[in-house]
Image (cartoon, chains in turn brown, red):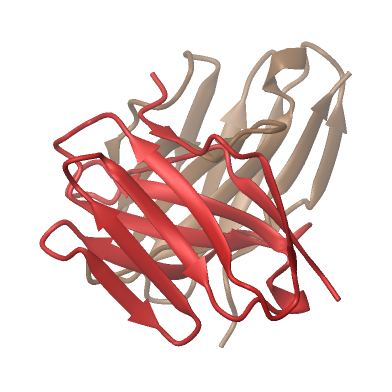
Length: 115
Length: 112
């Protein structure tokens, strides 16, 4: 079946602009995670959804970052007033349930470059 | 606060030999660990995991060892194959919701 998809695959924007990154999880997966991977580092947790609600948003770096999952499927990560430090690969993962029995399946990521 | 560390950024190994990747963690509350493999332009894919109630888990050519007292785990790949060339991430499960904390990764290159 289809895996996790993310669009766009690449996004170049200018400092101060607003961007939206989309994640389509695997059908039927109730858990959805966003991570951010900066150059030379491992993925860093941003936010977790169980269904439509954000169960844990403790990883969001500041209030410029916001994510939604209105119908419990597709999720959008929104970044306002982008800064050069926001440049990274944004990864989305979905899981059919809670760990440890259920592993996370990652999408290919969106590479965000803020000029 | 980086609680999962992979101190070797790269590893080069000959095809057919053993690859050993190391990972250290600082939080003794962590009780479940995973290894992910990542190819360029793809997302990480799950490889193997281990619970703290075990000290070893094996899946084909991949074996993960856990030393709780040393807060250390390692991934062994035997024999290494060219398709194993990738970045390997060690991760710890930090809560019951599935939040993972990753190490910085080790780039493995398997040479013919």
